[in-house]
Length: 109
Image 1 (cartoon, rainbow, N blue to C red):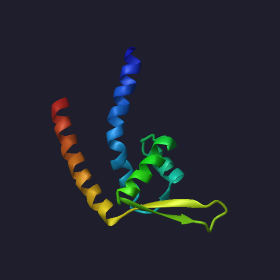
Image 2 (cartoon, rainbow, N blue to C red):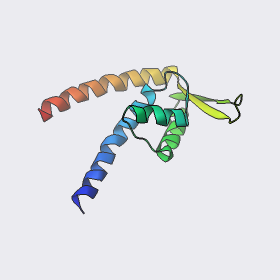
Image 3 (cartoon, rainbow, N blue to C red):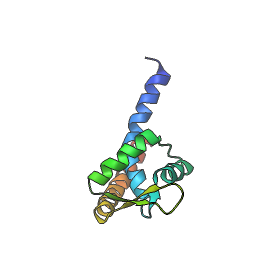
Image 4 (cartoon, rainbow, N blue to C red):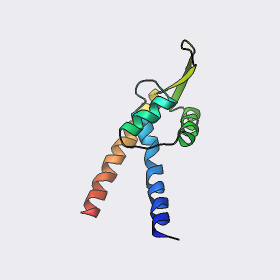
């Protein structure tokens, strides 16, 4: 296995653990899929739509998000927003992320 291939796989693993937290952080107000991809991308978090949509459906089935169709525009859009349970989980994940980042900063010097 080439180093580039190995690094790419390891970076993908690292990012996989941050996508849920990233998505929850951006759904304090309703967003549809493409607007969420754009917002995350503008903040440096590249997420493919084929990764995002299954994640949104999973988070909704777990009760962390709710969705609603907006059919008032020419193109109907499904908007997602964080639920109260989602806000609680998000806050716990956010606190844990900060603790983990502190530990990693110490370890990495």
